[in-house]
Image (tube, rainbow, N blue to C red; front, side):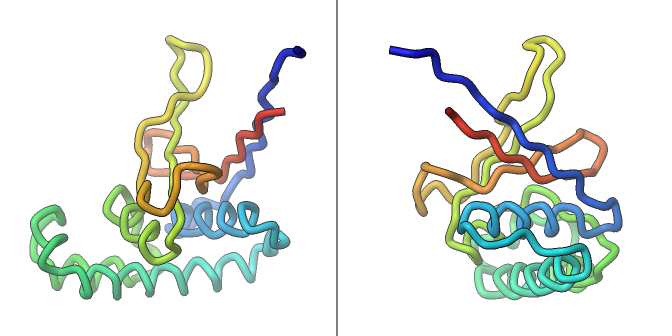
Length: 148
């Protein structure tokens, strides 16, 4: 039996305040076999996902209110703004909106590679998640890790 190898494809995402949403949209398209959107369409789809994520917070208010920082209504109002960065709560909500699993990776110098730091939406399956790379300073890129 031959050795399995791993192919990593990193797709840089612009740092315009939408990088989390852009990287999730990019990953969802790749996962679904759809063409990767150009930058303008990616921005539009990212803003649509952001809006759906904000709506999902409102729908799930009772179960999410406790883990957002500060006043819930202010938080949701802020996250609707295209320049406001998203983080773990938004990834969690995006997995529900898209009904797809999302795995977040980070580069770890100690292991000399990528490590999984968070998984969301596992109830939608564990195979073939949307994959994003978190750089540790508020930026996300799209990632595809393929076993060959």
